[in-house]
Image (tube, rainbow, N blue to C red; front, side):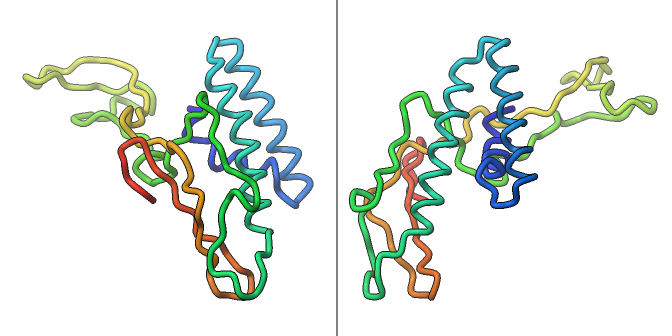
Length: 168
């Protein structure tokens, strides 16, 4: 599930802790290799785009717009453009948390083999895997204007437009 793990793993790639950074690079390289073997080239391109996005977000966070600035444009710094092949989930709990099918009971000591029930209540053996929402919103684009908050660190408030039309 590269789309779901992307937000927690790609950040390691830019960690200031060298051990974490090295681990993040190994995990991303291994994931890309496995995805290529499975023919999931779009997911590989999304991983590559995620590295660029995180680098740009970190650079934006470190940028000091000056003492009096309350807003700025991404055009003044670096435009955060998402490549068409990028498929970034909006990192919400519902999008990143797997769900097991309902009406399930445990059979024996195995955590992978369970007994599911059909609509009429008849037991049916199957191996269940966690599933993620297929309709979870994706980030469509970032708005060019952003707000600079008034603390010493000058954090920036970035707004994204999602595939379901919301601004977050």
